[in-house]
Length: 209
Image 1: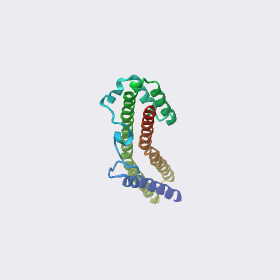
Image 2: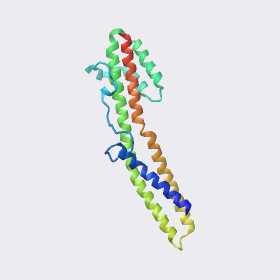
Image 3: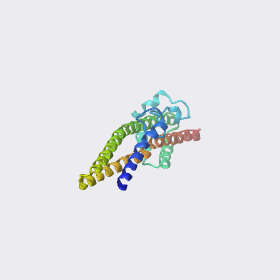
Image 4: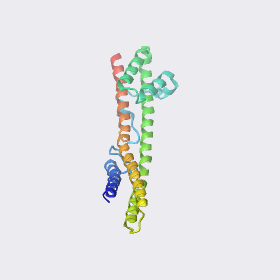
């Protein structure tokens, strides 16, 4: 009985966690994170340099800029290495190409990383939508096991089997809740990286003046 009570307690704690987080975040019922949900960024949030010219939106037509965007946006690359790549790229440009190419780079990084961030946010919402269903299933399974245990003629082997199933399902549920703690940080990590990369561009341009 004590073992069953422990399983029930774990299930209850896990069920409560997402709903508390959702209330702390905002009114979106599918948003489980403490962090406020901001589906898309604005360029002004990460770029304090001069206004980007319309031609910057054509960054995808420039193979060198496009390749650099892909490289520095990848989170597996240490931020210091990414910033160095930006500065090295700037150093390789003729003076007359510096400003337009750097503008393309900023626009490219913003478009690429904002899209990646939005994709992560959508994934978090989809992931979280499954949690209430799993929580309801856990509650029902726990109730069914309790009802089975209350029967005087219950099969001990069946009780043990269903108890183990409930423990396994509870562990999976708790692992999903715990994984959200990390996943919820990813949009902020992307935003911070984008800001740091954009700052490297701004500093590079300032140093060339």
